[in-house]
Image 1 (cartoon, rainbow, N blue to C red):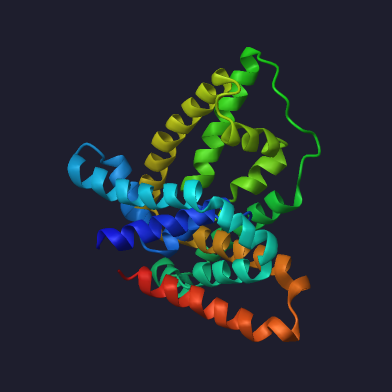
Image 2 (image 1 turned 135 degrees about the vertical axis):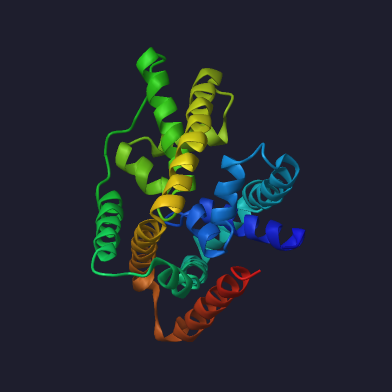
Length: 266
């Protein structure tokens, strides 16, 4: 796997993190780097040099997407929303045949697919109208650490959108403000960071355990998350689909599907 391809995959994962309703980890799964990344995190010191190189190249791509191209990506979302989202629907859908083959869906695993769909539907439908406003208390620092833990969870678990999760908890604006200005309250940033570190350790261990002990069930859940994400994104663009842009949307979907299909095999 060449360095350029790894950086490109990281770049697409970073874009997935930025776009509302898209899961960066689901993009990573779609591009075939998810399991290797989990393994590299869990066995970081057993092969330190190669793990640093592998995760570092992906990280470079993610940082390029977030720090350099985030404004451009947001411009496309604001001005060409339906086209941008259609491309990402194709990216997510491109790996579906491979996941279905690996999961070996049967009458038992289909329950995990349905449970995953129900969970994502609940996240997207239930939004807390109350806005979280911390007051520098000990409980606030603990809660902010929990928010950091959940942010890492949405980054590691494929198909769960951080945007939807934080909207449900009423802390979406708080997280956006923390990302845009991490030094406005350093104690909040430290608490959030502690949650991130705990999250990346515990959740990656949990996912590694699932991949080792119940891989087919985990894949079934990921299929449910994937189908839910695709469904949510399609519902968002339906009002914008017209006869005049239908052919372009089909082409963009096929481009995204093809990119995902071939990059997964690199």
